[in-house]
Length: 243
Image (cartoon, rainbow, N blue to C red; front, side):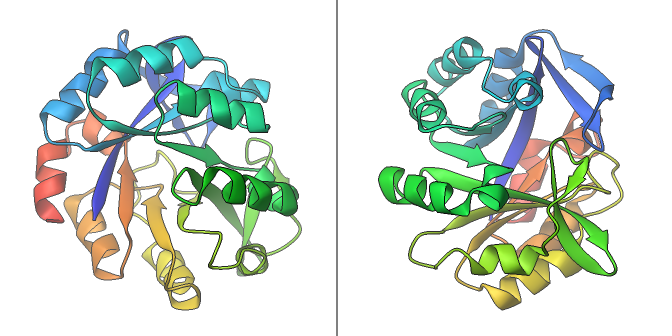
């Protein structure tokens, strides 16, 4: 299983948000490139980068910094934040990103996203599906998690044929940044319904048990941020736990 240490970029710094709230953030690094180098030195082969300014603005804002980070260290980068157009995807790939994350549009503009998957290839795009629970069902949350998609997660996944979709990042937003443990039940149900997908666990990872639990149910990867920044375990320990 792949461990994706997370670097969230805001105003050029590395931060972590609580429940995706831009007003509730902790600043960790003045130089995110140094953090990326540290993660790579500990054995990370992939890094998950989120352009928070881009997510808020609705278009990527930190191409220059991301390009600098991609060129500084030999590591694969999965990156998103405000991706809305074909040009956004192309520019991030040109900046050295290996896989681009597409969020809200994966729910609201399925046909367009399927066209991008066909154009750029299934290995170049990860769908980010962030969910809240409504009447017991996981429902994608949109626009900074402030709006409901009005349709459940399983219906959204069913729109994508297995021939086009490979990578899916799944977050229970109630757990994001809260160190309350990953929602393994949600992930297990997704894998039961779509066993061919490579699903990344995201949101709430607090312990190595969360990571080994995600591996045990068949997740292809797990994203971890705050737990690493606050010293609950290191990248090297996480990689060893799921080896």
